[in-house]
Length: 262
Image (tube, rainbow, N blue to C red):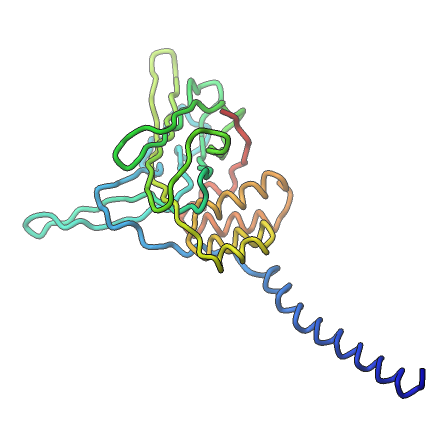
């Protein structure tokens, strides 16, 4: 090969490498540095569907921390107009999912020895129970996930479902209490472009995308599963903190995650 041709090949190769590096660097940087920020969608217009994610629960002798039973779900405060110009405030506990069988996450503050039973219930919007199961008791106060995978229950697109988590606790031999949280989940259909983005993304990037699109249950589950698999990862811990902070649940950020079975 003549010297001129060798120089031309070298320069062409160098230019191509430089172009590829310039194109790929912003993409890699964006994927690495993109924070997890939840973009809350507007809640459903039906104001007859209140919820309770746990803020008002009692903090008695049964619990091992200063935190109540808590559902890790967005909470929306809405004002209702009453007669004679009066108003009332209603709390909606609600979020979106894109999957048939999502997972639900809760913080249980109780000492293991005091829990008698944990029950999860899923209903249609007309109060028909479609799934009910008992959950194994975790070894300590912790955040747990309840998954619908490998169960008969599946969610239909554009329909809302009501869920309950009920915990029966025996504080002493003469006192048994039933604490519960309740809220709603609605399944949505992903647009093709969004579905394609998710398929090309890493699990951590998927959590970011779900959060940006306002799909709470999927964003939370993506991060929770990553944290369970990588409990020492400081980047995932920071993402977890940021995601929960966007819905006002900073108080449970430091609580451990544990796997439970049905």
